[in-house]
Image (cartoon, rainbow, N blue to C red):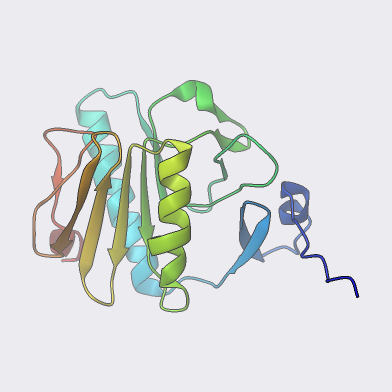
Length: 181
């Protein structure tokens, strides 16, 4: 008896989803996304605002994008993610569809329904794709885990009251509780 074949999805399947339905694609596997909670959206807004202001004040070349923003990690049709926040410093990766290749810095805010995606699947995928820095922000535990892939440092965990150093910017620290006040 033949085993059932697991379907491999492509970006064509992502773009064929009904309006309002969001999903990510990792190695041909589709992961449906639930609508985010209010705190999730507030964190995205505040992070984007702080990062954008920092870049602008320092005449930086990087650009910051909130979700939904298409990232084609491996420049193929089997990997499509929408990180909560993407910072891209190489503008040649940007086109009208989104980012082709790895952003420099990705921030994911965990959802109660599937935190394992951020801590396992995306962690591996982002590291192997060439993301320089990855933050996992967990509103439930009020922690942020920082991965500095560029320097190969081990992860550090902070709480929302700590000054969290940004690895790709030597003089930027973010205190998440300040963003929420």
